[in-house]
Length: 266
Image (cartoon, rainbow, N blue to C red; front, side, top):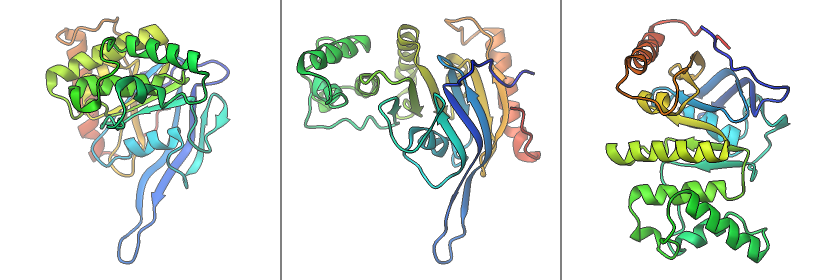
């Protein structure tokens, strides 16, 4: 099985021998979150990362975002080493993290303070429309549903026009139907923007519906166990035989990996 995407001379994201250990304190032992992660993400690709809770998925995303330091190995975005946060890397977390005292348009505008007033207004209007919230510009977060609040968070992350959008279990707090609607919404936005997406999730169906490839992580310490290419045409039918067969293969790999030694297939 092919386990590496074809990439150009410069990958959108390139990770080599990436490891992260959290030092213990007192009687607490050191915690090895990631060990020797090697991964390439092609420009415009949707990469989904699945694994059990505590396997280092979110740590991996935070390192790419520049929010986590003190790791070993290299993390590059667009050929440049990651040394800290950058407008070229947008992040959407499980909680929308909107500022409650700001309206929808003000929350989106908060991400682009460097723009001139007219360009800022146009950028905000464009991205509010992109996520389907035209007419809700002057609403506050408390007046929005969970799905609508996450749309605002996505608009805010996309407003600076990042080359990479990182999604850290962004729909985990939503009900099943809203979650599926948001997955379709993200796919629609991706088709319009073609931004490189990295999605961290524990939901195999979500990974298969959105991802061009699905990375299966081992339990702690997190390593790349196997990468599944998803060669299904979009829009994907969750009820199809092909979808079910891939789901079964990933499910088996996910649980069998706990009983086998790590096997890197990058």
